[in-house]
Length: 109
Image (cartoon, rainbow, N blue to C red; front, side, top):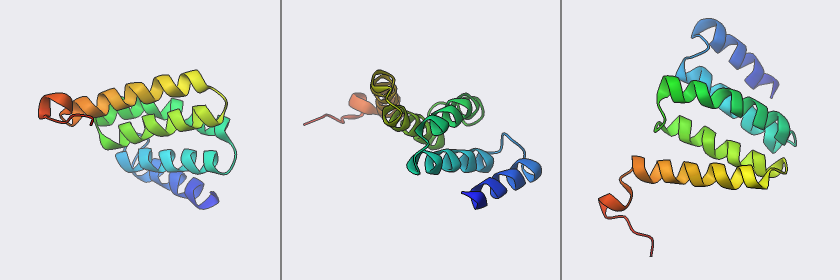
């Protein structure tokens, strides 16, 4: 994770804190923080990142959706089952609407 932390510092300095690449690096740093046992730390970082991604990249952008889903996963890992389920439902609803959902002829079997 030290390499990702160094990369994030460089991206913030060179590309700025709102650049999509900087956001991606923040996402992956939070993801790996969670995967290595710090689910609460991952949740905190992803909660801070999500509003920025929504504003800069848009609510339907793949990166924004990935961050929403990762936030739900790590909320679950941190013990917030209700928050995780609510976040996943909201993410799936947005994803379905963004990609056409039922109006595009997509139906669950």
